[in-house]
Length: 615
Image 1 (tube, rainbow, N blue to C red):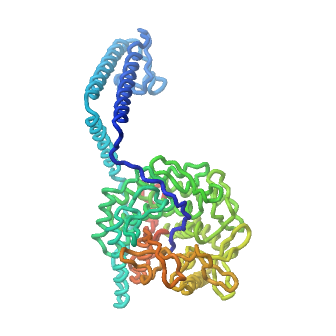
Image 2: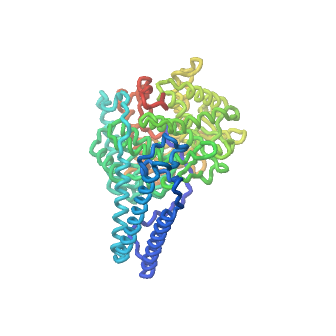
């Protein structure tokens, strides 16, 4: 399993909009009232103009023409199928002329009455005070919001849920293991309870400062990332009261109609993945509805010349863009390549093929492109369809793309042979060009940059050990044993990166230069941010759990951030390690890159009527 790719952040956040009650000087209030006078006058003039235009239509007793597109309503006796050349354009003459004149007169009278009514309403409005006008405007706004909420709660088409196995239980027989499992559950309670007290509704928690925290991957809005990310972990651990608290917040508060620019990748794996997993585990419809609402907000990100999505999209305007630091405006492989699992499930649950088509288009485009040495560069320009900088990494910027190729095959009940072939081709090129052995005998995965291998391995690349083991079954030429051994060697190297620090926590990246092996050299690479391996001794604080800035210092400084993925991934994986294998068995569930379990779509479930995309 893996963690999401670490994205360099721009550091500067968009300040939240002030949505409180306006407080302007008297002259500004007068100006706003004057503007309302003008708007009402314009409206009145427009109505008068429409009325006049209609009233003075040229009258021909032998030939009348309407082209308003509403004839079936306004002139119900006209049969569009008889004598009409085009729908919405009718020629009326002969015996029908008298009835037509009566209808025209009725319409004129209606417009005149509406005009007079609008003028009367305008006069009444102008008699009211500024406070009364404001109150009416607020009432109308509330009515619109309520109508939107009602529309959002419209149920989706019923779809049979796959046969879900192993969503409860997992109690180990060994008493010592059971105690360790309970300890992990207590750690989850500690992290959740402090977030509940000090950061509720915020995206993340600062456990030392004891207040909410966020980064620009979530934009300027507080979307409760920790709540959504933690739901399935709470459910699996049997913390149902906490789960219901999170569900209530999502139902009452979570709103995606905000003017906020978010990371498509992060929001997909954390929010859509988390909501889908919560839906499958609990059966609560609200989670599916919210997942679909958010997915609809992400679709405009795909509006590029190539169909490769932008890295970020504004949830309200739909405007997308890429990270300023990404090679010449490129999209990132690990981002646009880590959508498949969630989007396939969205099409499965909604019967709408749009999500499936978006991710399959990405796959088809990648298949057509030339790849240097068979490797996928980390950057692809969404405007030109060309690779950016030739930088290939199985760590950050590339990692979960390879993971999702394998997991697309697993999630399809091993029927997506196209995904499996892409995975096999990719790991063969990786093994040939990127995997090396150090002088000390440690197997590592380097990074290819502009024609040469950099002997550096990122913490995020440590997932590859598990990936090779997970993909061993079904590998080419009976190489299952080889890939199991390769996975074990990479895991051993990552263990060494932990063991060679003062805190026994792994650094963000580590090098293999000369005498230096599995050790971080640069200060900027010595931090640990609660990725899915944790030691309570150095990360637990009174207000939750915090990352540390230097794993080589015996007196660590905390970074004061409790990441949402600590609850989604780190604690869930620890809990599952100390559970029996019948809890979320891997032949029935596939974990997304944020550790959210999604069920395997067996053949019996992928031929459902109404789900042509998955078929």
